[in-house]
Image (cartoon, rainbow, N blue to C red; front, side):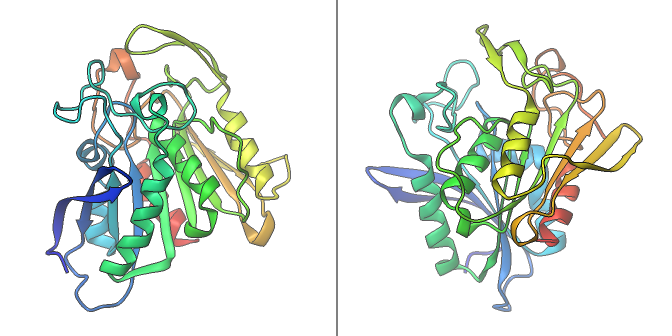
Length: 289
């Protein structure tokens, strides 16, 4: 058993040694199985940035669960990750990033972690979850599509469901969070200028949310749960086996992790927000599933 705290670890996947950050909570030595949360960083990010931006490690210490922050591949493994010169992106079907150019199957990496971590630690296999931001949100979708039986619920934030195959073979509940002033993934879609200067058309956010809701058997018309203080909660469901989708839209929020610190300049991402703490809301949702 590792000591409580952060541990930078590796796991062989094919010819590569894939890196990840594991956070062990301080009270996990009584052998009782604990939940495990995967947190995927955004494009150009790292495991450490994901931990800093989301605060999931501090949440894990308070609530008693493991957090694993997998790390995407970057073009030059001997140089630090930078958004413009050496970015790490997940292979999720966007056409962007080293992993997609090299046809790297990132889901194989996630499957390896799902197999190894419960063997090394007291993980409750019924309570394994996945959250992610932007390109990492798309990786959440990808992992859940291909490994639906391994996750109890998912939480993409400000990212798209790019690939539509394979459809998940069992229903997984989802909470999805986005700012309505996101300049990189606009709520209504459209042309966006990426940080490196390219223009790209992005689909409406509702396409991803509604597709997932349909896949898990929810009716196409959602109901509004609440709409106050600039935060609207919409629910699809119940679907198959009681699965549901909760869609949260935050007024004036940009391409940020709600409730988290500023990671990139506001001119790139838009405004950060404290109208909602995404980590708290996501963990509450996970506990219900």
